[in-house]
Amino acid sequence: MCPKDNHLQIPDLSSPLRVGRLSFRNRVVLAPMSGVTDLPFRQLAWRFGAGLVVTEMVASRELVGNASESWARLKSSGIDPHMVQLAGREAYWMAEAARIAADNGADVIDINMGCPAKKVTGGYSGSALMRDPDHALSLIEATVKAVDVPVTLKMRLGWDENSINAPLIAKRAEEAGVQMITIHGRTRMQFYNGTADWDAIRAVRDVISVPLVANGDVGTKADANAILKRSGADAVMIGRSSQGRPWHAGVLAGAVTHPDSAAIADIVAEHYNMMLEFYGADIGLRHARKHLGWYLDRFAPQLEPQEKAAIMTSTEPSTVMSRAVAAIAAGSGRQEEKDAA
Ligand SMILES: Cc1cc2nc3c(=O)[nH]c(=O)nc-3n(C[C@H](O)[C@H](O)[C@H](O)COP(=O)(O)O)c2cc1C
Image (cartoon, rainbow, N blue to C red; front, side, top):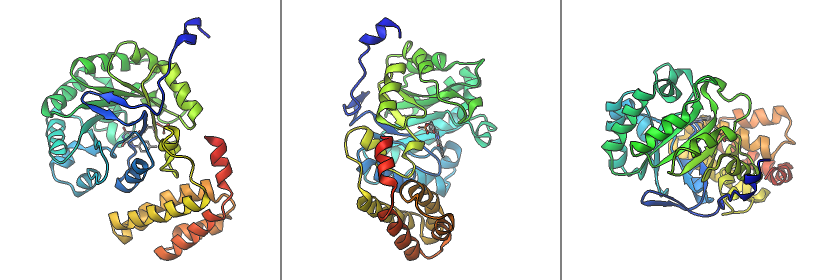
């Protein structure tokens, strides 16, 4: 280990983080995840103490075009501050969408430059923007100019290992007025393969002074402290490790302790009902299956595959709920959960 590492102080995950005129209540951020961090999930994560939660990405042009899915993604009831993530490839639509989001209650606008999906990069938004920093900057500048609320940026290390340009883009973004930067320690070409490179994030720390959030493969408190130490970041963002446990960001931040099996069963039932209410019964039932699968995998590992399949595919909400809740309440997953923290 380099001797000067011994002197590096890492921030306390439970301490607040100032971003511009805002103060986030702690330093564990729930990652934006399309198809996961809808309003019910964010409401739960927020209630259990996440420092900040972010909407699923909202396509800028679709929002301006009034698409109902975009408006659903923009909802925020009970969450403060309300951070909206926008994706797009043209400055005009990003600026218009930012204005709409801010006029409708967004306290922070985040720009998505990290999404690797072909559907998104094929349209030259998400991480494809990193291939053309000048163009990316035009989008960032337009967004910052369009709104009074802080604008933040989320990106990867670069497009591929031969084009690591996050430090360059981060520096220019800060000069353009961006107030916080999140780096997922992978390149676009890695998608979600391999492991996130926490040390590589430090090259961004070295060139910016606005708060830096480090992201990628953080599952435990030890991971969270290690990524802060290795990257020099001010906060951590967690995504997949919160699937099937909306309280996990709050646990890492020290805001809550692990729920016990009975409490988990109650949370699952509440989450399920929130989803049915938010989407309506038919669509809610389908969306909820993904979350149920995660809950059952974590907290009812004793279920035989056919029992799990029967719960997952039932179309009768009361049956789904009573069987899932019973399996989780009887589950043996809690100890593994505790060990993993
Ligand atoms: C299902 C899923 C959906 C995602 N959707 C988004 C998104 O809408 N916007 C975004 O910036 N990143 C998105 N991401 C990336 C995450 O925000 C995060 O950067 C990535 O999962 C790495 O963090 P983790 O290792 O803690 O999961 C998504 C990731 C997953 C797994």
